[in-house]
Length: 630
Image 1: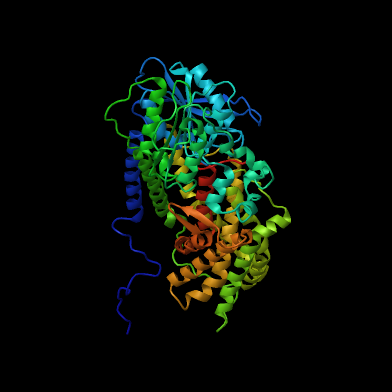
Image 2: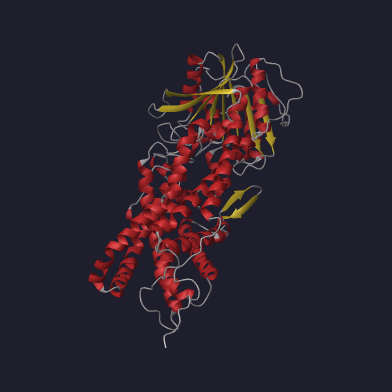
């Protein structure tokens, strides 16, 4: 007798119920909310009371050939009438003129025309960074531009102001000038010498900095280990009781790159005759503005980063400008709150993250309808009792290649070939480590091909594999596309740093080097270690194992550059040994491993993860914080 029909028990294989509110809707909605908040906050700290104009000019030349400098002219709106001291503003290393708009705007709102510039090798300017040596040329050229082209600026009262690298550059420009074109200098942080700054941050030059210097883009033109090189970077050899003129030196006592004692040392040299042997007083003005020998040292509670939004620093700088211009100070004035624009940028970054995730969530099932848990086949059948061997087969070559990468680069003559700091050094490492791992990858691909039916099996799957790889590339580039789309539209109105730096070709070169290196390590992990681990322990333990391997690889990468293990990075008020700092990176690697696992489950491969991670990293290092060394 025929069985009566009954409805099947449970959903069919592969069925996924649609949630009432889909994830992509939530992510995109939150992204829009953060985007709106970010735009409002940035505009509130950018537009009111100031007009902006992009300008360019050519340097007069110092030790290098003349180059084109990108500038941003800020004028008070409405105009204050008459002439006031004009300000040349120079940013810090890896920065740009847009990172300091909150300071520049506050100065302009008080009636002072401000010409903010990109130092050479930064932002839209040409040339390459020389750590404050040749940068004096653009300070002089900017001062000349203010005198000749900005009627609101008093040509006899031009002040050079800068932070970090800008602080060094304006100090040197004021001290080395021959024509008296700069009548005042405001430096937010200044080193006693480059050597002292490097030692204070990373220890003796012959231990780590000197050994690593040859891998940096800056080594193409400057060798800090050569005799006499560091001499021209010594501020103490330049400052005295008259030069630079009307010198205001400001710094945070929590600055990671220079101590209060260093700033005192610089100001003591600049006030030796004026003080007449008396102890230097903080917050006390020595000398006289009229004769050009006014000096003052201000120490706040800032660190090197919060100096970018230092209200007290800005307040004292404005008072210094008013004193120079003979403008009465306002009673009961308070330091401005400069965090609004920075908080808006943080909201904008959160919006880009949420919008990127939302876009990826929206298209994932359309791009990968076969998505879900992808079974990761090992290169060969795991043997009982030998799973540790499979894990070791992944970890040992990765760790060995990481340890040998930088010595091998030196032996093979692989030097800096990308001019951007960060992406250039990482490209050397990833390229060399990839070359060292290629033999293992070749052997592994041979076993994979054999398990899939040899050459004929590979050909039969080539079409579907190529299609999935193409989709993985597109999927991995979604976050980058979202970031570029949003920032290209908003960069101008919000006065944001340039989306792409001056040499965009190197973006793609860096992307190729880094994504290939990430892809090979990821591929080896999932073909060797993951199949052996997943059957015995949960995913989070697998992630922890991988995070520990990646962290150890990071430590081994830098180990050949050390002469001793006590090299420390100064962090706020603490000094942390660099090896300990690297060990603390395990949580970061665990997050990366989790994202990699999720991306592989979704796309069936690790190409999307590699492109997503490296695309954003390379864009960040060649755009918003890019600095060129050649």
